[in-house]
Length: 439
Image (cartoon, rainbow, N blue to C red; front, side, top):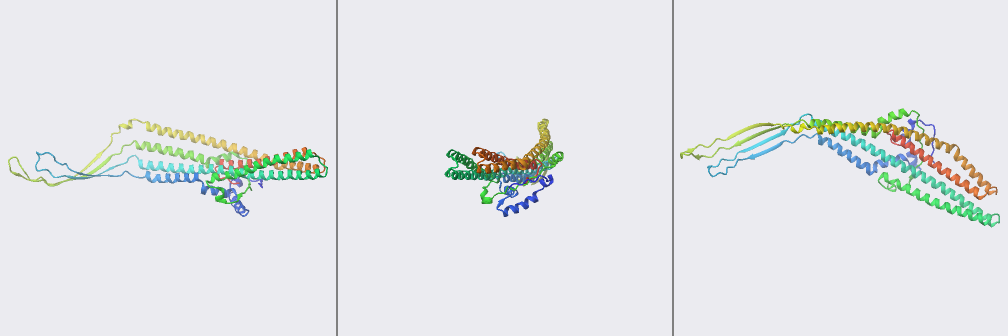
């Protein structure tokens, strides 16, 4: 059964992970899987989270890539080769070797590393956001599984009560104390309710199947035949909603993601400005020309060969930045920063509204559950017990008993829904504050 203490502080609600750990050990001894254990399994086995972790690894590798410096260029040359017939003897081939390197200016490398680091932070916060969504889906599936299973237990108990009424009426009919029409009516009521129970069984099975999707694996593969433990213990929140809003702005992953996106946009803008600076290219080359061949001059006399030559040259080339006259890249980068600032502001406003809405929903769910538990549920059970006693003594009709049974069933199902609503509101409030949910 789900117990809901009404006098716990918000600190106990939001820092109940130690309590949840103790509950996990107890739940395991009882053969059930508590909510904290289910979340741990999701962190280990979720396909979505595994994919997002790969994105973080990729972003981390991007830091090393961003820090790479330009590669130097090595050039080898030979020639020129003389093809003219008039030139004889042919000159020997000259050889050269050169090395060139582009010098980055404007702190481009540091700016690239800053952009890569900001992208890593964006990926890490995105991973936390993926966890938040996975936990929200998991909480919905877990709570629905508990609600449908306990609703089925209630409806099966009601079916047994209707079957007991039919058996009692059969005995009374055999003794001549009850007419056949009333017996048929009780049987018809039981058979109609059986259809409701059959649907409830299907709903419970479907809810159990729904627990597999957040994990990315079948429930039976991870937990075997154990069932979810439904010993939820959400407590009331404090009344200082402004303090909750302030905490949410510091800890919510969507706010942190928006801030990381703004930092990334600013880093990208800085890199754009740095990229507008031209990068000179320095070249160093060495040339060697071997000694020439002996030849015959115009007068027929032999000529001395040209001496061998060793040369060393240095050159500096600087691009003419005509393309920098267009400032479209700067406009785009600054627009991206402005958009990120606006997105951050909108995210902060949304976070504040989310906390206030979930806080109100939580208090409303707590109030509804308190009313059911303190009065409505007990009154419905008392009416049903009294009507059963009156029917056995002949003081109440079958229609009155069936009406009381339906009212009690509706009240119990509404009570289970109220408990589920409170558990859901608890999770939503915790998630809206940027905390891992605990039930």
